[in-house]
Length: 337
Image (tube, rainbow, N blue to C red; front, side):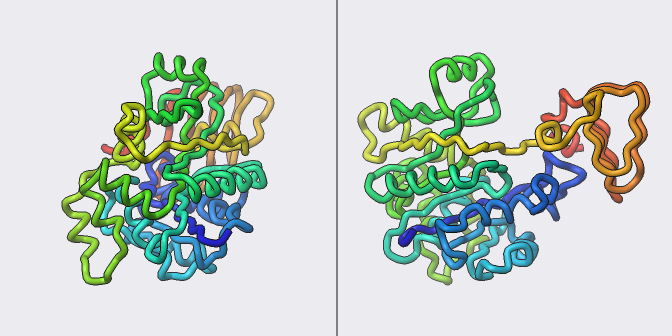
């Protein structure tokens, strides 16, 4: 599609899949689900939509070399390193700066660490989102039909054009009944619309979203930026302003049904790996006796389980993880120690 640029957001920290992933080799580089790394899959499924010269990657400064190696077909100049992490608000602004430096193209943002099992349907949804973004003064997102009341995802109301970030459980159940869709973290708009949205709702990011002159230090800009997601910084503001009748940027929603999964942690192994007769997932040298519902990933030392249930056990050359499966979403508590 001419006049369309894709930006892959790849600023992961490696927390949710520790010790398989680390800050030096975060989630997007894992070759666990589907054989290829998640970032490689993110780029590959854009095939037919955009050429490699029109793909950009926003990642951490320390990950630029690894990203260049993983994605050799993308020009090295298109792989942009942030000097420090400031969440997706800054990452999207920086992506607009680079991908939208010429004329006023549609820029689409894509996570680097999600799974899509139906790429043809994914591409159809992206085409539709780009078409809407090209014609309308709107930021378009792709919404996924929820399968459970998730509290870790943002939601969109496709009918009213309303965007809401991560709710509590009670509210999530209400959204599920109301037909809300999950926000898949993909955003599409003309570069000028993104810049206008930043100016209205996150003015501190406006200069970052402007075309780079080469004279301004990114480190100097990032030093004073607030750490905030694009969802909170911009999308909720657009939603509120449009609902109040004061906004001039709409929220567009394209429903998508393409087998989307954000593979948020080790619980995803239950989805993508076969189970033995007692519900255990085993990868690598694992011996499991009279044990049920465990996830065993042996990348170094053999794992041997006897009479235990619902554990996640992972070994690597540098670390061992043993956790209750029901608490695996709390990995940050462990990483902070």
